[in-house]
Length: 219
Image (cartoon, rainbow, N blue to C red):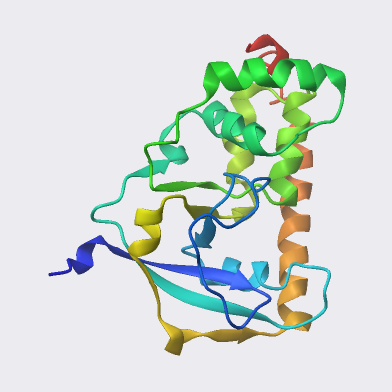
């Protein structure tokens, strides 16, 4: 018998009305690699469904995930450097030789092994959060302000289903499918991202940013 206490409601924003979450699919260049990405925030899922340059309405799909038998890695419970290491494993925060040389050393030192987990939970590195990562690897951001930077903008936490087992415990509530108006909600997405960038820029350029505990000195 299912224990509803273990169930969480998640949303997936997509430009597609019909989707079929499938184990093994996805882009390895996404934040946590291949997998199916969702959020507990209906508002964020709505914005993510229309954040593509294609000017058409999006769709928000509602899912129920039974977590009772799943192992979840929650990056909010770990040092933020572990999250950055995971991000660097899948996405390039810079293109220069300095980063190419230092990134593998940083990943080796701070990474958390994710192989035993069914679901990864953590920040979504959209344009604003990836801006933080880029500033950090260029030694422009002090470690002490990283947690505060990640709180700015209310940009959301995402869940990534990684294992075949996780997909088996996911079900969609098809009756809850919502169409999202592009012209209205895309502007909300742009404004949220703009506000986050401005707040991050202000903090990075403030006296709170000592620029002492920086990327290259943490390796």
